[in-house]
Length: 329
Image (cartoon, rainbow, N blue to C red; front, side, top):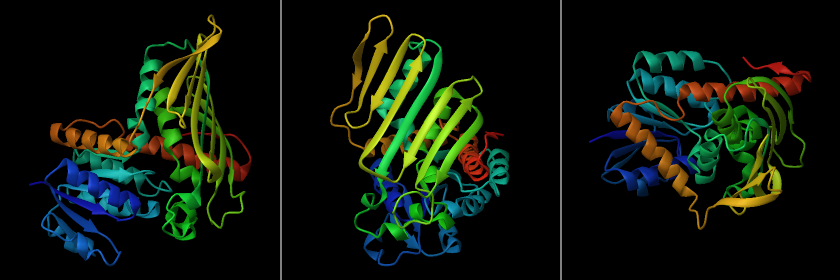
C-alpha cells in the first residue's frame, strides 16, 4: 500500500485529503499543528505533529500544503527521504534553497509537480489546444485578469490571519494568485523582461501586496498584460489573446471561449462549459501526478516550471520596488 504524507492542513490540505481518499486506497499521514483533528483519525488517516513521527510511517509521496515561506524547507526533508513531491503553488516566496531542492529531485530521479490547478481547467486546456493549431495566426499580445475579494475566500475564518494576507508567510496577490503567470508561461514560453506596479493599495487589513499590474515581454516578443487584485467583487477571471488572424476571449463567469476572426467581423462561441464542478481541476491534477509517479514520467508542471514562474513574480516585485524594467533571468 502506498503511503502519502500531507504537510499542512488548511483549506488546500483538506481538499487534497478528500480527493486522495476518493481516488486511492492509500494510507494518508497528515502532519499539522492544528488541534481537534482526532475525528479524522481512522484506519487510513493518521494525524501526527512532527516530521519525525511522520517518517516512521515511511511515506512514498509527499504533498506540501503548508505556508508558502516554509515550502522549500519541508520539501527538502521529504525528497531527502526519497519521496516524490507535490508542491502547492507557489513553489516559494524566494529563491533560497530552490536550486538545491531542484538538484536533489533530479539526482534522486524523483517526480515533482507544482499545484497550479488552472492548467487542468477545461477552458485553459482548450485555449492551449487552440494556440497549438495556430488558429489566431501570429500572437501579438495577451491580457489576463484575476480579481476577487480576499475576505470571501474563507468566510469561516478571519482573512487577516490567513497566509494569503501576510507577507511574512509568503502571501500576497502576486504569489498567491500565480496561476495566471503559470498558464501564460505554459502558453507562450519564457519571459524576457518584466515591469510591474505591485503593492498594497486597498483598505484591506493585510501586510502583503493586494494589487499587481504587470507588463511581460516574452522571448518570442509577445506582450503580456496581467492584472491581479484581492479587492474586487464579484470574482472575475478573463483572458484575451490577440493574433494576426483572430482574437480569443475567455470569460470565467460564463466559462465561454469566443473567437473574433478578422475577416468575418463577428464573435463566434467555440467552447462553452456547463455545470462545471470546480473541484474537478484538483482531482485531475492529482490523477495526473499519480499517473506520472506510477509510470516514472515527467509531469505537466514540474519544479522547473515552478522556478520559471517564481522568478517572474520575484522580478515583478523587484521591478515595482526599483520602478524600472527588470531582465527576467
